[in-house]
Amino acid sequence: MNPSVDALRATFGDAIGRAADVCGDTIVSVRRERLYEIMKWLRATPGQRYDYLVDVTAVEYRDRERPLEVVYFLRSLERRADLRVKVELDPTGDLTVDSVTPVWAGGNWLEREVYDMFGITFRGHPDLRRILMWETYAEGYPLRKDFPLRGRFSRAEQVRQALNANPEAHYSMEELSIAEAYTELPADMRERLRKGERGKIPHSE
Amino acid sequence: MSKRTVEVELATPGLGARGQPARVPLGVAADQTVEEPEAGAEHLLMNLGPQHPATHGVLRLVVELDGETVVRVIPHVGYLHSGFEKLGEYRHYNQIIPLTDRTDYLSPMANNVGVAMAAERLMGIEITPRCTVLRVIACEMSRIISHMVWLGTTSIDLGAFTPFLWAFQERERIYNLQEMWTGARLTTSLTRVGGLMADIPDGFVEALRHFTSTFPNTLHEIDRVLTRNAVWAGRTQGVGVLTADEAINYSLSGPMLRASGVPYDVRKDKPYLEYETYDFDVPVGEHGDVYDRYLVRLEECHQSNRILEQALDRLPEGPINVDDPRVILPPKSRAMNDMEAMIYHFKQVMEGVKAPVGEAYVGIENPKGELGNYFVSDGTAKPVRWRIRPPAFINLASISKMAEGHLLSDLIAINASVDIVMGEVDR
Image: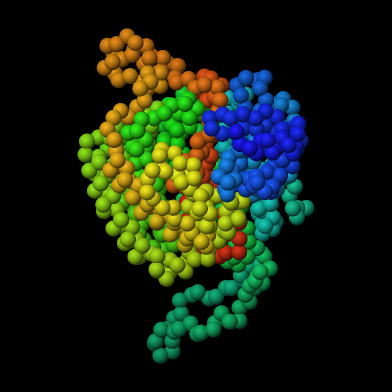
């Protein structure tokens, strides 16, 4: 077993849950309240130095009784050691964990993807938006087990929405504000953007 | 935004007094009012893609420009999202393998190997020696074609057309070999859990030897044309620099990470498929710019060629599949004539290969970077979760950081240097 587990237990006590070796990797569960603190400690402490975030993902089991897990794959490049950290969430409860993007910049898109696919909110993430699905996607979170393989909407409804989508909506308000482009849009386009749920429009009347 | 209000008489000037054609006198537009916007006063929003040849697929970049300088890049991905991970939860482990052809479609064989290895680690299967060597051959062939595509498209992005033709010719030769082996040029679906779909056919070893003996010539030609080319160096050196710390912080992997001076290669540092027994070097850059990424990839092609030669030398005889009827389909002749084989055949086709409860992550060094396959099993024949760690997706996330402050034309070079393949970025 990875010696980091003992070091974690010595430092954080009962915030560290089960630990096990599965298929050659050490997996350790931590309490979600102290995740950020633990991650910062794992990154910065000499002797740990997990400086490389390999991946962030989430797992929902078919068994509804089991909690939803957010999985972090950490690696120390200098020690060539891997550690997998898990946080368990109640799928019916509050799906919020602290973002690790301030610790590893690589977490940015990975957490956005988990948010997009599982609906888990990362507190403190600088730019938590959908990434693979479009911003106005309304069918839910595709990788959740209650999400049907073919999507929630009927094919007819999906086609209807695709045909009715306005192309300008593919710019976020933030992007349109770059060049103050909003004021230069034709009136009907502005009207459609105003009607869409696209957040607050800058420089609008 | 202020508008240009130049209105010049565009009527054809008639003939002059002496019959010669009258010319428009120079400076005729000098009196016209031209309201030029003040430089730097306003930023321009520019949309690049998703349908643009320089974005290497359906990547869309919204760029904030100050004159010609990139202030900010906001990438939009997902146009090719196919939900492979969701589809995988509804498929047996062997049925997942064809999905991986379509993720990183420039190196399908390496993806096949990665997903099969993850399933095998989950099930605790040891593959045969011949299969191990053949998988190494598959991985290195993929690395060569992927780097050739990268080299060709990048050189065309930066205005060099000839290397594109040379690179694609070499890729064509590997494609012919892939076709020989698997029957498909792109959707190879080479591996099976516990082995391979097919052994190499007669004449394959000779054909691959012919390739490995002639391929370095092309690499030398490309090297001669590009490496010391003033235009190439000018367009790539010092562009898109990432330091080693930044590269690690952004979780880059593969040639992107190594070009920044971090000597991490999964083949060396967490060896799989007995890579530790091969004699090869890992090129590491020092400046972390587009030029170093080019050098690293070019040298990796040489090293892959070396590995291919060694693999062909040591290719052992023997079975390609493990001797386990629960995992490997019996041959058709036995399935039709032998009761026991028929039962195994039936159970595998109808129920699939069951994996024990647990989870397994296997990262392999793909051409783009570390490709991870993460399986979580609840004991049934279909995974609860199949996660691909997509190297191109994670490498692409750093593009905003790299492009800041560069010219718009450098953004094209930077985007090309990431070596994205949208099938994998969007999955």
